[in-house]
Length: 602
Image 1 (cartoon, helix red, strand yellow):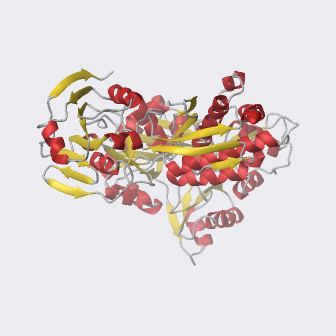
Image 2: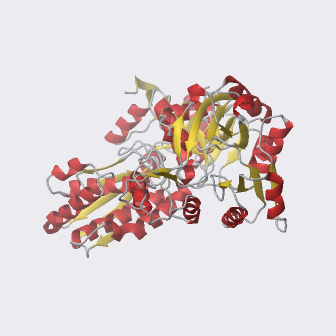
């Protein structure tokens, strides 16, 4: 972020550092800026900051309103507003603050991607400027800017499933890093103790299992091949007769795309050819692929969650509904239902808003009402024919009610197919009875089942994430040798035999050695070579050689160091304290290599 005047030259912000690891301001990677306000305008900007704090109470601590007007107080509002904007849609960041220093007011905010945090800071400054200058300031004036920021965050921040795993990792002190930058692949743990996930999909899930679960017709074929109960279906390709397909299956039936998830394009409970044709049109809005006409299974929709071949949860999914009060229209009732549902999945506990779309209008029409109808008091109508959480469904935990035979069938299926983490969709009139007794049937299997269904049913994120992560993720030993200049041989002499094992890695600048192998990392980003070593699952320990300037400029390479050796170097006082806080032990050597003192980290 460049030095940028706001409201003329009355307020200025300039970036002074971009730390890619723990630093003297933040435990997380962070951008640090200096804020300067012309003294005669401090009170004016303080009023604007107070307005932001009141309008964005979820992002800004109301206690800041009680602080005396000052540059530091204004900067704290900016920092918290920036962090709130970054975490609103996608993000799992924790560090933001401001402090008066001898030079200026320093403001810092953590980042997943430095550009995203820079954009959010610039938007925070613009928000402050507008709130200060305009009496009619409202959040609507920032909608376009926030939407643009969130689009960027959507591409570069962890999605909600990764966030749930990150919450569990943070609770267990397991480090997290991107396995591939700017992607959905995240690594939990380091080196030999690392596991890679894309949402809930990991290397423990077989590639063949993914292929079998990818498309609905293949999943159905698997169910049939294993003798699992599943409803009859007919594929409907371009040019095929819908009338013939419906005749083969009969009413009631379901029409769905074969290549989409999350309930997209699905219409259930079809009773007439007119409804079937409308359902096909609905499905064609989301796919050009083949459609499926499926026998309708009576009963409730259940998501069976399996991890490591064992059933861990059963969640009943119900379509969202509203109940008339004799006064409000259906549109108003839906508005009230959506009032505590938002794009912020964490705040709404993953309860999605129900969209006023064609699928909703058609579902209402089947029940003889429209959006502007006033329902009699006590009359309940459903808003979707499907119960997917992604389309506004409701989740109820019924894990303790599942019949043993349903559990056994689900576990046999997951183990046979090779799914480490699986979500099986099961329909039945009674989950407490066997499939034969209650006419239960398996509908689909998913390799990346949405963890949101568990959160929506009341499960804590840490509990869910721990189940998926398993026991493996953790840390490997990391040592650090700080030298007057980069020299890997000098570091080896200094650290002795610490990194001699064939599975030990050494990092020095852009050089990476894993045992006898020498690698060169082209990525110029700070500590990119360290991250490369930590991604390598054969690595059981890591030694890092660096200079004082490397750390003061970019922050520490990792958030935990088992041993630090300072070979004839010294740090500024605050950086010295930082190293001692993050290190298990710190040794100080004279330039020739003679040990002078050693102490444990605090």
